[in-house]
Length: 228
Image (cartoon, rainbow, N blue to C red):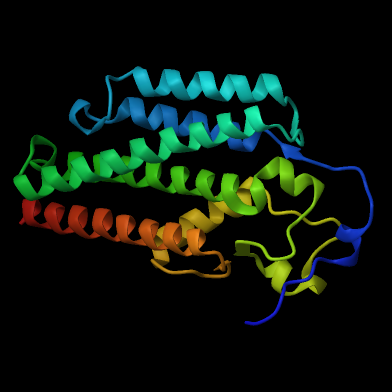
């Protein structure tokens, strides 16, 4: 893969920015908040309602500053978005580390196969959502920047960018594309149809694959051991 990935001619023409709807990203954040509340106390970074409250306030501030569709470029909104993703990612990584520690030390969550699978599944889902939002926020400068113009050299190359003839007029990656990336990277442990080009994208996808492999491998192995 060499050279620059060209945008479709339609995307290079002068046009009004069309941002994507805020609600898919908002629903992902709300889902992550609920999953955090459902985690056992010793797997959470802070008391039960602290992180969901912080995440909810950051989300409300984003919605108030750029309601409806995401197309307003603002340093303040960009800072809020990165802060929100940072809190979600930190929470997910913390829960992962604590779960692995419990499995290795034989914590109380590991004594029941059913409980362990439920807890492991919750932590795994939190990591998928956190990394999908990380990709969503960092690729191309964020959703607001992508609404105005796609970069000529993207950090994450989607099939529609590698093969512009497959893209519809004015195509832009949406949150669902990044959610799919996060899900497939967490199950295949490697890139599928989206290629990481920027160093940060390679590091993020590699880290997510490693985290997912540790969660799934250790949780399943421990559950089988308990059942046996």
